Length: 313
Length: 325
Picture 1 (cartoon, each protein chain N blue to C red):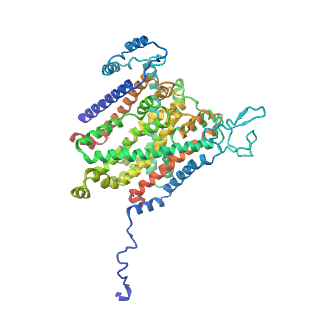
Picture 2: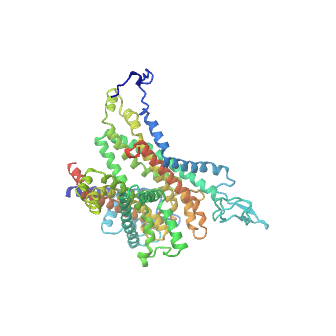
Picture 3: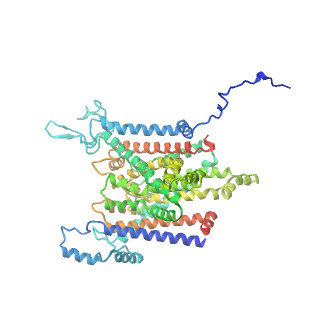
């Protein structure tokens, strides 16, 4: 197990390093100049370059950036356009996004699992049909359509929920954003859980357990769920990642000050804020790779065959 | 006890003896086609996509207005009056200055006909769909097949590359592309180009690993076939089932990616329009003009539903499970 984890961690670290390196080099070698040529003289630009360390070779710049990154700051740490430091803004945004994301994942997997289990236990009935319909709708209707309708009906037509996210009333105002964000998670997890459960319930060892006299909840918990959940864990991984993309739209619709909105502002605004793009890309990539790593390790814990395979390799 | 008589039996003659009427043999593709055509859900999907496609092709051609045109009439004082933010209306029925005009979906806040714009947007989505097919077929499949076929060091390097490419979040790729490119259809297509092939390459590789050990491949090699002949002429035709399924499922993903990018403001830019940018415009006006968002959202949902149903139909038809039969 230790070797398996170490291998995964090393691979992830290497990937992250490569991504940061490529991003950094791409942004540095791109044509154009970060300074407004028409408003600055050549000496001012040279002065500024010296100040920001842009006169050094790219590799040296990269290692400077990496060492600053290790000490917890993003490069020279300011927005190119208004000069405000990146780190505090980024941290505040990350907190908002993270809270809503965790809520959405928790809500989505719980509801998805429940629906999937109920559907599998009532296979072929109206309940099952309803659950299937729900999961088809969840896959086909983009979550932002759902978000817009939810907001229109339950915040505007019936003003029950707040129209926008409000950090001071966190729990109440994040119900709608996290619920709408979890739609895809619910439907995918429900469909997968149902299919896996049905497959496992038809297997010989479950029939054996049944014939020994186990039944109902105890049978599901001790024999069925453990094996059925392995594939479900694998679908959760890409879903968590999709959540990052979904969050971008969600944050726009519900006015959340989150990382997705920060990214949109950095690339869709008047000019592109390279410092922000770089910092946010690093954050996104670390999140993504971190999540994948955790899920890989989790997968190894649930299914011993995987870590055995890794040991042999 | 009954003794069988010769008259109980009838001689069929040489003509019919090798035709099994009960379990008639049929070609693989014929079986797939029959299975697909009998699948009600898949046929619903075909009809949904077909209807949208027909409207997307025909509606902008026959429409009175172009999708960029701001509809206006000259008022009594000689100034232009623009048909801004009209709700859906038929000619003759409405009680306003434009009562002789038909706006089936209404007009937007600049006075453009939403009927034309919606179908123009659907065109963009369908273009994106075809680009996605192209990317999947060309890049993903070749990459996967080559990686799987050669194995060893080639496979190792190519798979590490896939692993690294796959662990870059799509958002990061898009934002880096946004630095180098102008916003618009080009950016959307480029981001699909960089991200969409990975899933397909994995499937093609897995299929190739299975097939390359088969005897017919060995036979072909013995006859002197080159590597690329084996990959593209011998192995590729046998992997077509899973590949078509994957292609069908990557279409809705691509359409959604465009809608998502245009919605957050890095996709299609004005005065061009797409489903995503129309939804964005509708969203901005949703509290005052809620009818504006309905057409693009419906088109998007129908397209997603349609392609997903077709994909499911293909999956079942190409690899039927016992319980579906």
